[in-house]
Length: 126
Image 1: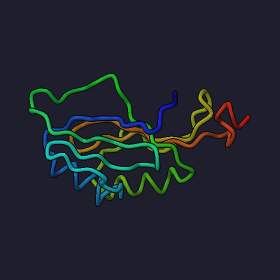
Image 2: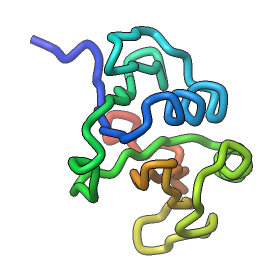
Image 3: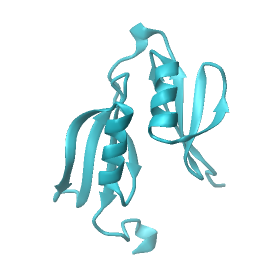
């Protein structure tokens, strides 16, 4: 038994605004429009679901979406151009051996973009 794909869902107050941010802004490909929920491909097996919810239900959650890439600075520039609020500028984090930044989408959902210092960060690659 295996997991074939992974979807992380976030909830937003303005689906159209978030569609512009994640679609044209960050450049993720829309693969499924369910009306109140849009699912974007992030990688061939990883997806982000952006779902409409009543505004009073949107708030801080314990979840953090992290996108792993070699081009952290490029994604930082793209996030700024898309209208993200930068929470922490790109920096090296010695404790976790990563280079990363934190930002918020238009609904305040925080996300991180990071690069591992060790290119063989997956145990299977070591």
